[in-house]
Each structure stands twice: as C-alpha cells, then as structure tokens.
Amino acid sequence: MHKISAAVSLLGLTLLVGTVYFSRQKAIAQATAPTGLIVKASPYSVEETETRFKQILEARGLNVFATVDHTQNASGVGLELRPTRVVIFGNPKLGTPLMQCQQTIAIDLPQKVLIWEDEQGQVQLAYNDPQYLGGRHRLDGCGVEAIKTITGALNNLTNGAISP
Image 1: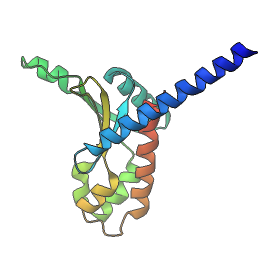
Image 2: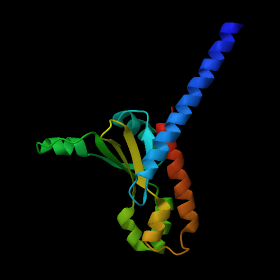
Image 3: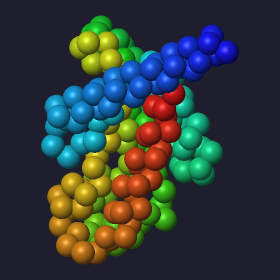
C-alpha cells in the first residue's frame, strides 16, 4: 500500500512540475511575442507538431491548403535555417463573412500557423491574433461573432496540437 501511495505522490508531483514548466514556457513565449501574434511552446518537434496540427485540422473538416517548409527552401539556395514551417488552412464559412465586412482582411486569410525551432531549441507555434486582425482591418463591430468563433477555434486547434 505504501508503494502505491508513493507512486501516486510521484505521479502527482510529476504532473505539477510539468504543468508549472509549460505554464512558465507559455508566459515566456507570450511576453516575447511580436505584436498581434499568439505564441505557444510545443513539447514536440517541428515535424511532430505540424503532423499533429494537420491531423486535427483534417479531423475537423478544415481545408489544409499548403505547407511552406522554409528550411527546405533555404537549403535549396545554399542557406541554413532552423526548422521553420507554415501551415496554411481555413474555413470559408468563417473567413468569408469577415471579407464581406472588410475585404482587406483577405490579405491575412486563409489562416496560417507558424511552427519553428527557436535559438534555444524550443519548438514554438504562432498564429495571428484574430482580435488584432479585426483592429488592423477596422472591422468596427462587423464580424464580431466570427472573430470570437475564430479566436476560440484557433486556441483549441493549437492547444490540441501541443497537448501531451
């Protein structure tokens, strides 16, 4: 019985340390994020994070339009770049109403998620903050519900890709 209690305590401590670590990583990433981006740390490699993210998109019926492998493109011209990929995806049912409000938002659609390995070897995932885009394109009340929906969807999709 004592061994089971010790194992449960060790498991609880491990979960607590992991939660604290990832909360700290998230706070650090957000504190250093460029304006208008939401940045999250991933415990997986760039490739695994991308694969997990695309599987979630496909399972939810979203369109995956392309993946841009910037590392491969850099290599093709004799340059080096840490792993850096952009997944381009979208849902016309959500994006179109925003373009009907203000067509300039089309420059930021479809949605994109950047996945890269930073200088410390930590994998990061970033995307445009829908609230920021709403302000950038002066939606001014138009598209408020779509922005809320997109904000929640992006948060859930990206959290799913980086959750252990």
